[in-house]
Length: 355
Image (cartoon, rainbow, N blue to C red; front, top):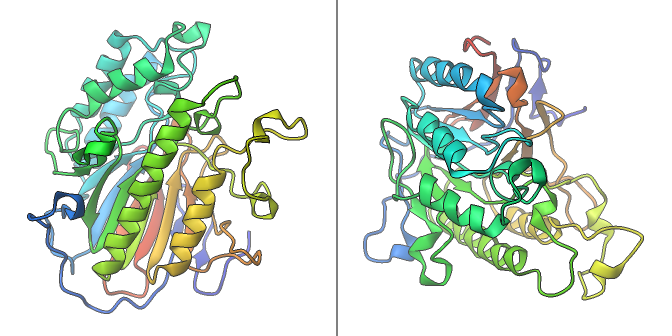
């Protein structure tokens, strides 16, 4: 995988250091949380904007009960280091585990034991795929509602030590979307989106695809608001976190606008991520800072620049990081350094925390 001169790669092993971005970020005054307009409120991590912020990123763990103890030890190990936050990009159960309350509650308690604040974004195994027999034949929408009750009861992260977050449920129109959250760390906005990995839970059955359509609109407005706020505050970058791989390399740029006939086409299935990718392309193209897209991946750790403009050229300010699989026990460390040429850096860590 070739990379522009501003990016360098030293291998994708536990001893690897991946430098994601280089940019000139002039010193700016720290953004201040708004108290007069809830829709414009931004919560900052309690650290000066001029200081380096270190964040752990992981996904797809634990997978099955046997992995719970290892994940607990991993969270303790991460907590012993000088990090500010843990981002869990979804996948807290195996694909054949039950979606019942008992298991979800057990995984919620596990994440709550994180010594560091933990921002959790749901994956498809937790709700979208729960209709399968192996998972208990649950209704996906009902499981998503239960997930929201268990994991997002407060406007704060999970963990023994918490940080306040802004949730989309602050807006009356999107009162149920508590999983979509944002906060600011190191003059960079971190945005969580509920985008599952089963083609974004797009359904081909007849009738209105209600859950997908409603969540697509909620995500569209949430992402647009985040970019707007980041631009207003001259932020150095945006980190967009989701579980699903949006398939940025499947030739979506050549396709026309979606129509009512998409669901009936036999040549190809409807791309459930198409509108999201188009929005990311448009928003990133107008954003002066760096954009980091983070998601889980069954293929393991990877870094590239697959998001292209309408002319087919890679957008220079957008980098994608696919997190290591949960079975590897590895995690990725995001280093945010405001005002430096390399605002984003990512280090691939092994379970013991070395690199």
